[in-house]
Length: 81
View 1 (tube, rainbow, N blue to C red):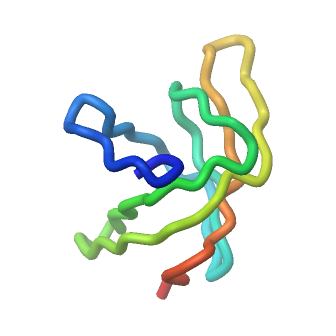
View 2: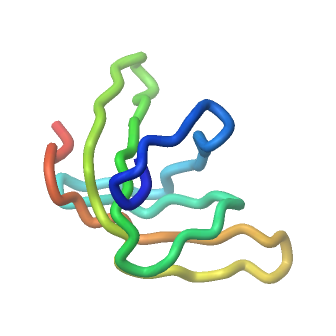
C-alpha cells in the first residue's frame, strides 16, 4: 500500500534492507517515493519469518551511479520483533 491505495501485483516493489531496528529501517530500491509517503511493507527475514508494517518515508538519498534510492522508513504501526 502506498498512501492508502492498495497496489495491484504490478505495483509491488522490492528492496533490500541495510539496517533495521524496532523503530524503523533503511532500505534501498530503484522505486522513487516521496518524503512522507505512507507505505505498507512486508519484511521477510533470513529465517523465513515475515512481518507486515505500516510506516512513512522520512528521508531519501539518491545514488546517482546506479539510479537507486536509499530511504529511511519510520514505523507507524507494527513495530518489528
